[in-house]
Length: 85
Image 1 (cartoon, rainbow, N blue to C red):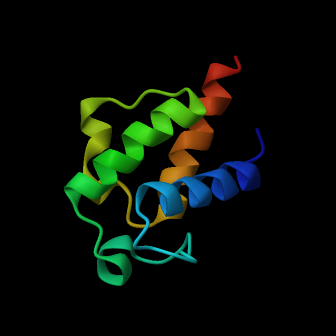
Image 2: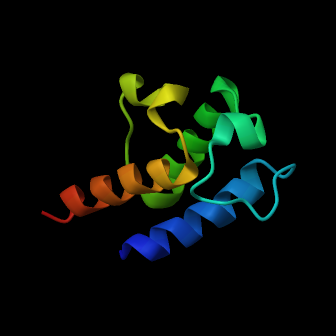
């Protein structure tokens, strides 16, 4: 899957899982701009695991691992790339 496709699919998932957010920027600080908290990021990660067929470790569930939604998309993309090998 291409990196841009991961970003677009994640953006759609964000709007589904976090309906209060609309027209999100993938490169904006998610805590300052959108008020994302630990529970919100875990909900999004769990939904991402299901949508993309990837797994996150307990350590990867921390909010500070993903300053932007783009950072989360990059981790998902890396996991998909590794799964292809």
